[in-house]
Amino acid sequence: MSSYRHVYYHVVFHTKSSNPTISNQHCESLYAFIWGIVKNKNSKLLQINGTEDHLHLLLNIHPSHSVADMVKDIKVFSSVWIKKSNFFPQFTGWAEGYGCFTVSYREKNQLIGYIKKQKEHHKMQSFEEEFRTILSEHQIEIDERYFLK
Image 1 (cartoon, helix red, strand yellow):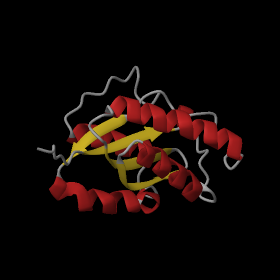
Image 2 (cartoon, helix red, strand yellow; image 1 turned 45 degrees about the vertical axis):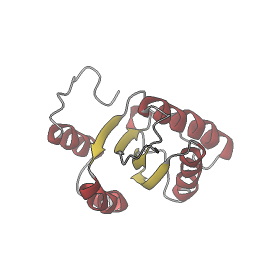
Image 3 (cartoon, one colour; image 1 turned 90 degrees about the vertical axis):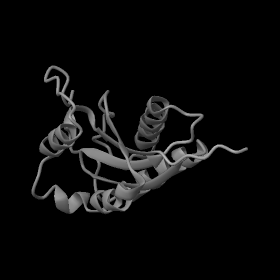
Image 4 (cartoon, helix red, strand yellow; image 1 turned 135 degrees about the horizontal axis):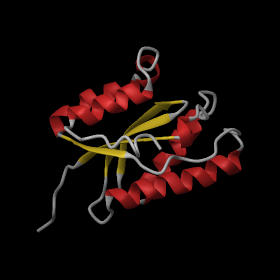
């Protein structure tokens, strides 16, 4: 018998020091590259978007991969690609941590819409405010010593 699963992860990570280094001009190329990383890991990227200082991804990760390894690979391989591409000359890397939250099948489409509207959303709310809200909604206590470092 086959194994079946639907496990969605909302992953959020930001640039080092939350510097605004991901320009809108070439962000679609970055998103396409990340899409390829995920696909090569036999997983699915349902949506990706972000702003100059952070990204949101909705992933369905194959069970043979851990979330930590997937995020690490996305960050490492995309950092190398970014530096080689010269599309984002101010980019110095991704911050060390990330946020990862499970999403139910019923919430999937709502989250896809939220991710698609990131650029509009951040005209009214900073990334720090958004991330604090997400952590609070998931009842995650913030350790200020490490928050957005």
